[in-house]
Amino acid sequence: MVPSPPGAAETRIGYICAVAVLFVWAGFLLSSRLGAKQDFTAWDVAALRYAGSFIAVLPLFAVFGFPRLPPLRLLVIVATAALGFPILAYHGFSFAPAAHGGVMLPGTLPFLTAALGAMVLGERWTQRRVVSLLVVAAGIGLLASDTFGDHPGAWRGDLLFLAGSCCWAVYTTVIRLWGVSAVQATLSAAFWAAPVYLPVWWFALPSNIERVPVGAVIYQLVFQGVFAVLVAGFLFTRAVTAIGAARTTTITALVPGMAALAAWPLLDEPLGVAGLAGVGLVTVGMIVAVVAPRARP
Image 1 (cartoon, helix red, strand yellow):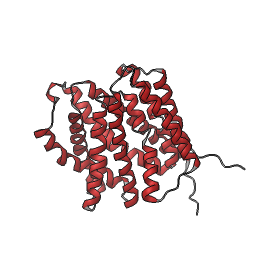
Image 2: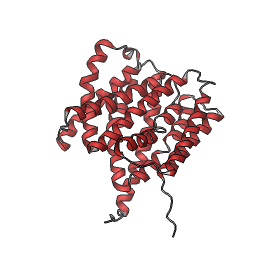
Image 3: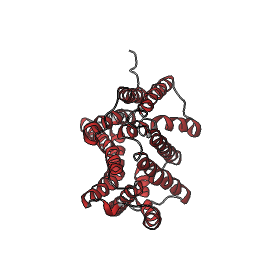
Image 4: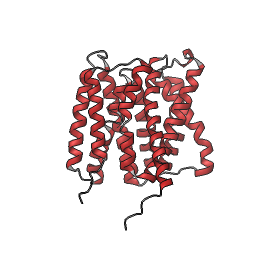
């Protein structure tokens, strides 16, 4: 039975949530790069993310209950989504500008997820998906060529971004394989990352957090911990529920271009012609991948 289309109010809510996710994800890229340009170490930004999300998630247990997952599933979720993805991304921003993070993180993620889906879940690749992958690959190549200009060492950050995207692709695949809900996964990652990571950071990892103004610390604590972890997770889930995954990911496909354009005036990171073309191609490739062609009458 084909589900009935959502009502106008539900559709409106879905679009509002999807657009809000777009801004939060772009803000994550810009905030992470800002932290790298300040005195924070990448380890510091990760610590603020985990401390903020841990504090924010505690009251949510009264509403949703405490998530209880089998140990192996919990370990994989924490290792990939909670620890692997953000730590690799934050270190990537130490070498590469925000535009590169915008392309290499959300730009490559749909296709890494599709590859794992084919191998693990038996999902088929369509001709449209193959074409979109080729377009994205061309865009990444153009962006990489831009790294040898104003950002000669950015290729190291690009590799870290790609590794982070692989972590998130693994996470996306296993929660689909195991049937873990978005609420369970989000709350588990938000809670368990702090007790695992913070003691190690405090005693063993390099930190410059004492040199950073208090306002900058509070900003990263709130944005990275609350908005990037919890708010984005719940908004994305709500959008998918209301308007579907295809429409939601079409809107979030605008993240690379939005982050690159915003980084120009906010972080003083202009792109060359090749970089702009690369961002454009990746955005087009993502849209081609998620927008279904209209059925012929």
